[in-house]
Length: 331
Ligand SMILES: [Fe+2]
Ligand SMILES: [Fe+2]
Image 1 (cartoon, helix red, strand yellow):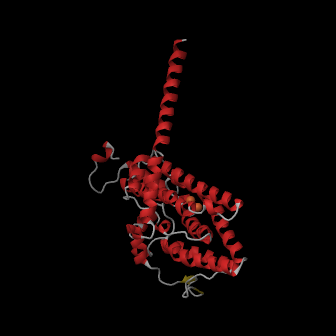
Image 2 (spheres, protein in one colour; image 1 turned 135 degrees about the vertical axis):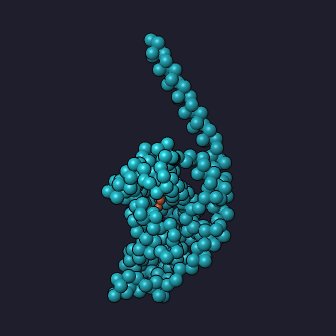
Image 3 (tube, helix red, strand yellow; image 1 turned 90 degrees about the vertical axis):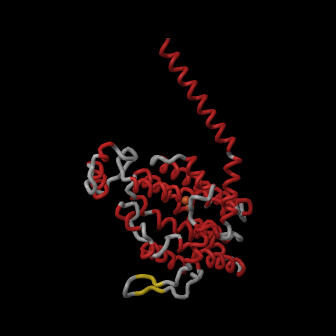
């Protein structure tokens, strides 16, 4: 928002508000909803937080696919709890985005009309039970690497939402790891199923960190604003560094023949990620994009009566309370 004070500024001059904003960022203090912030900062956050929320909500679908078919009651209960956590993550994040001046309805409209983006990984199918293991281990694992640094994001409501989300994500990752571990200790067929799921999810999970640093134009600004703390490639390195010893314990092979640790640079060398595929899926041409959006649209329409009932209940509560207040004042 432009305040009257800004209008009197000559180009190149910095307003007091802007100086205060820069100072807060420089001193690792948080920007809160009441504070002045540059429009571009607000817009970047709205885009990032809402995309993040959409990813949590759409991300419920690939796993929701297995709730009725989980192999035991215990697995079913765990998977249900995990998918419910993802719904909760979506809700905290929509609330955080709302503090920046966008409404829940606007965000939902952007999602179901196909205008908004969400993480392209959720457009891949989940044909086997081992996919629940691979998603937990790889997708939630990548999410943790991405999100732990976001707990220190400069925007207060976002950083605080991430703290709770990250605690739940680590449970998600462990449950995925544990599903794969059980399969790897099972029959040849089960081991084969686990390896096949890892083969399908490994590359898309590496792509979750986004394009290489030299092709990621917005990263530098996000880092200057201390929304983002590490570059895409740095995060990818951390992720692979976490996976390698865990893959050994599991006994699965990471499907990259070029993967090796370079002692000299202290970094992992890895094969080329298929960015054409990544951008195709991002553009809406992945195996399940249409299905995921259609499902969300239907769920939104079918939930209309719940939203209407809740709004009506809130309206009645509100008028009852104001009536009581008036009566109290008269008495
Ligand atoms: Fe999540
Ligand atoms: Fe998760």
